[in-house]
Image 1 (cartoon, rainbow, N blue to C red):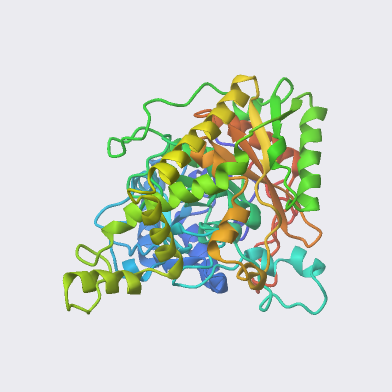
Image 2: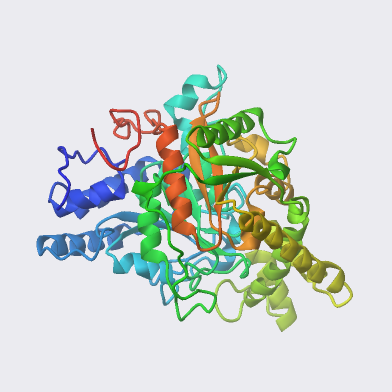
Length: 534
């Protein structure tokens, strides 16, 4: 029995997927209407630079096919007719996949990544490919060849009312976070209902925190990596961006599962969990890692972290301080392992098989060198150089092997905490709110990544699930998020806890009158909800 839905207006596009799916089934809105509305918003928000490629023709065709299925009463699933976007490091058949790099400009894959195919098999409408740091190496979505991504909150009413007098959004716009900033901005600006990102050291959770949305990193092995152009094979996972936890759970249900094309995926890995609707946090044990209370943490984030812990405790949860003693080594460890795998993965881009090829042909070696000089930016080349240094015969034991041993200690830290009875960890996601682009670029890429991913990198090394939940606006009217970390393959339990926290904090919806001339994105009740229009 479908729920009764009040009169749905096409301009209230900030609704959750479940409500919109029900409206599609009741004929109150059509897939074509949704698709055209999202395409219109993509054009209106072009200044954000969230998309590299907009697949308008393909999306409209998919919408027509979806509409036909609804008329026949045979939708493919709850995502049928729902607009989505995909980070431009996932292979998409017939659609250019660039990784925001000159190296892959013009490359059109012959196949879809498994996660993309699963979305299409459910009838989702692919609006386009989103912007990122080149080959996903960065934490601001500022280092891609197509230019930086602007955070939609730069233009929000909330930020406009609180920023310093005389500042103009065009001159002091904020970073979206990275490396999946395009996907985060696309969801935050209502140009799609969900988007895929990748997460190697926080590249989904970081931009989700800066853009005020839910960003979820699944357990390693729960979701297939096949077709995700690799950065660090042992840490990469597809990530999910949505505007509410229920939507994340719905998308995860579509994507999770064993894939014979990816040997790292696990058969039937999901553990029993309490359903989100029945979640009762009394009796839950929430751990607060003492090592995450770093001096660089902003006072506002620290205060909200403490308030969230108090919120759990007031509802009967047990909140305890825990120790992850090897956290302080995670940045260096991650750098060694990341660059080592990058050096290996980037070796395939040699100008011979696909992608860019230099016109210099004095010799094979000269062509190789020129191709990689022209195709990769300074950040990518720097990581390749670092990785090859760590993998040299005389350095391998002292760097790579030692980093792997430290990674094992980090994994054991998490195992010890969860084996002691802790159900979830509550931490900050980022050190502070989003910063202006002009401030962000004062630091080099490595320093920025080390600072911005300090709370997120260890999770990838341990293969655990983690989710960013937006909890409040800062004094500057900008989103601040907190991170919940769960046991391996207890992803759905983690999302149940995240839904409880989301319900308690009632994070406000972004108001984008400055960006949208017709103001269609402002919900009348000022709150984002996935269950009701009332």
